[in-house]
Image (tube, rainbow, N blue to C red; front, side):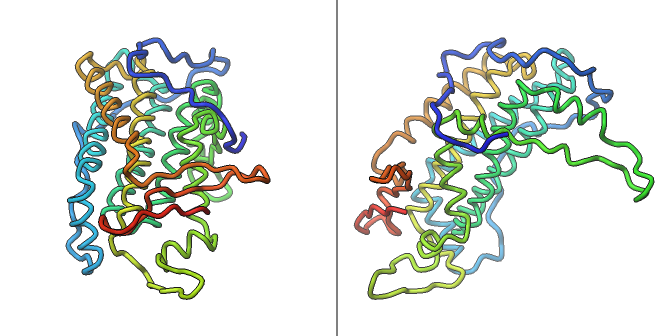
Length: 318
């Protein structure tokens, strides 16, 4: 598997969805021995509620996020609700097989990673949300990649759940899988994946932005465990969650033979994608752009970056 690199967006538009748009590879390994039983999918989804033990800064972040980013939160919740309903159609007898389970298993992890990340964003824990957003992209990329590499899943299903006598354990096995090419081929996911990776690591620039937001050559105003509301970080990370919602809905709609949703649900999903794209296209919100310097290095440029609505907007190059 490769690491994400440059690539063009391969996602189709809402009007292109059809039940046979996605074709997995021709089977070479025998079908999995398991059968899908007891499948349970939530009938819908709501974002987790406000924790009761927030400190004054996290509590204020929750309040201001709901007020200033309410549209994004509503769209994310609506998108997750749609995803749950779409995934639930995989229980239909015509779709309920282990190929569907391969997609749904990875989808489930992407779904919860995104929902959990949003909960952290709402309480001002922006840096803590980054690994979850990055993780969700890996799960979405894996769903895309496994369609052409289904034998990897079939091989796992045959080898897993045996008895390992030396440890007297059930040997599930790691089943290592990562589809870097699937991430690299989508310009939006590639950009977010690289940014979330760089911002989430102990690099000095992002660290300074998180713990000393107003630092300069003259001062370094350190705030330990800062959870105060920051409009720029909130808009940026919620935009990424919206982008993941769009990517997952695109994928789910292209997997019509495994998730045979009704035309009503498919229509709602297509409208959700259009609405998300509209807000993601606004230029008055904090966003991240890729900037290439004179040495050919691709760097992160934060645009419309500010803590409070009344502050002057900044452009920050990392």
